[in-house]
Image 1 (cartoon, helix red, strand yellow):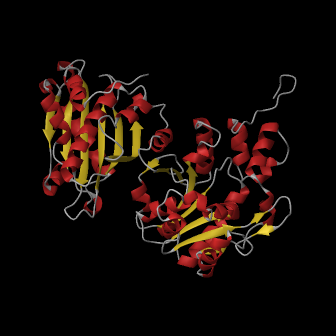
Image 2 (cartoon, one colour):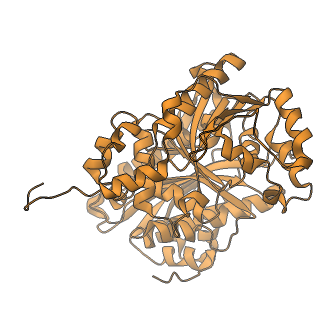
Image 3 (cartoon, rainbow, N blue to C red):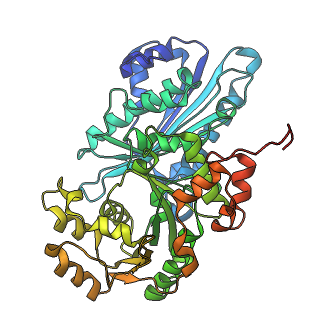
Amino acid sequence: MIKPKLTPKQKALAINLDSSIYGTFAEIGAGQETVRHFFRAGGASQTIAKAMSAYDKDFSDAIYGKEAKNRYVTQNRLRKMLRYEMALIEERIPREKNPGKKFFSYANTVTTINFDKTSKGHGWVGIRYQNNENEDFNEIVIHVKFKETNATLQQETLGSLGVNLIYGAYFYADNPRILIESLYDDLSTDRLEIDMIDFSGPAFQYVDNRLMSLQLVKLGMTDAVIFNSQGNNMLPADILYKKNIFAVRGSFRPVTRVNIDMFEHGLQMFNQDNACDSDNTQILFEITISNLRADGDINERDFLDRVDILGKLGYTVMISNFSEYYRMVDYFSTFTNQHIGVAMGVNNLLDVFDEEYYKNLPGGILEAFGKFFKKDMRVYLYPYKDPNTGELLTSDNLKVNDNLKELYKYFKLNKRIVDITDFNPKFLEIYSREILKKIVTQEMGWEEELPQGVSEMIKDRQMFGYKQLTFDGLN
């Protein structure tokens, strides 16, 4: 499908000229920037039932109710607005007198850049709507972060985004991927970041929001997305804000006992070092886009298999564009000033100390290390057993380039790199590539190398190339 590129004015006019589309606009925080396009396009009298901007907090509370901690720029506030306004339409516009009408409520609650430019601005934008009059309502909700350094420019960006969302909801509902791409029509990633999106309703009953999150990262609309063990999209700022963060990176294809051993013992040390507990610590299993693309284009079934298994084990998953570790830690630091821990294998640390990875940085490896080894950040190093020599590699006998030896010693002496010592030696000979071969070729014994319950899931859903063997036509 080739998507035509329309301007906001063209999209607003197309909506206005469709006599079946009818709804309200409620915009808080940046002016009535979206509805302005519809008024200016012409023919809006059959489209716009009401446009409002409840700027005063007391007045807004009187309409939509108070929010916990008096936070107005929240997903909960946005969904309240959408549902309240839709209920008013249905209450005041009788269906029997308006056959064929497809109602919608559009809303946004945002804060633009402040005067001191210490807060860049962000917000929630959404639409609740029908694709036909006899269907239940759909909802599309997105979170945006503004990148422009001028409030007026941010307001204009918000207006264009709102038009794109409304148009996409009605004209691209059958292809959510095209809908997501269309959100940036007349915009660019230099102006706006979309770091969460959620589809719900009958039009999207077969849409997996994790795949939609993957599209955001794949298309460069954001650097990272997060979803919990239930597969629900989470706003990174909500779950990382002022938290201690402990992360494990891997391919998890599939997750093995060595992955879990590294995670569990690394986390135990992290909690002891920093007096952390589960209430103030966020655990993340991270997979990079480059890892998902390791065998070519991203295989979405393979992607879902990996995160489904991690979800079954109860873990929160992050998908990111952070090929280098320092970018991941730098990202975490935008949300928290608390402790950050990263568990990794010895082979991964060798990559961290490879200067080739940092040629694109003006400050080279020193700049990268300045972002990686931030205050209160620590690497928990899992040993590696050389399959050929049987030698156990740890931080003590790891060999880095001669010109980096003193730098490596500095981080080690200052306990920014510490060894995980309480590990299970039996797991050191588990290699995910070997497990994958065994799964495909039906070799014996691979089940014991995975966490409990994972092998059954792989067999039941025939993941990672597993095929149930048949004999004489019988399973």
